[in-house]
Image (cartoon, rainbow, N blue to C red; front, side, top):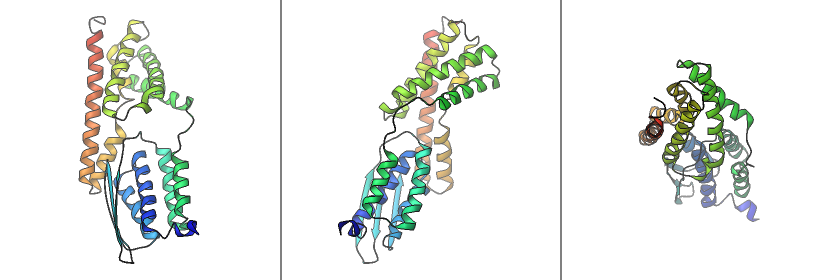
Length: 261
């Protein structure tokens, strides 16, 4: 009986809708997708008037049901690394919810299953992607084969650093600064060790691994869709990350500048 009634309680439906919106936003979804998903879920379970306001760190949901009841819930959103694979699973789950209208307990169970921490392991394909990206951009910007090789070695070490430390910090700007310093030091050491030849070319290939491209694209997409506030916030975060990356490599160059002249 409780299982059947769970979907008739607007508060529980709103909790499930906010769970979906929070997880999608944390995985990198744009604001329009998050608000549309929350609205569709609430409408599927009761109709009425649904108003959603979303920014990067907050979701406010107000729902006036067909029965005339007014409900409002808010949810604070914490930073989380972008995960497009989980976002795809959440999109499929949202369509299932709107079509099948399962009990709220089942919705929460499925959301927890999607967002459950995966067993940590090293993905060889992702490591190869790091190497190919860094090496290719080094060659593209004028580096030689030795520089490309050095950038590939640095890319492997950066992947391992990400694997060990990326999930431990919430502040992505500070993390970008730290990993940029580490990457800059690794680039300098690769030239000192004789693997690479031109430190600037090796650094260019390594920098391309950290450019916040998804943040920039989401910022532009949000602004084009009319979500100006969120777009500006995303853009500000992306610019701060870019400044942190430049500062990190600059610090590394100042540390090793005298040795590489």
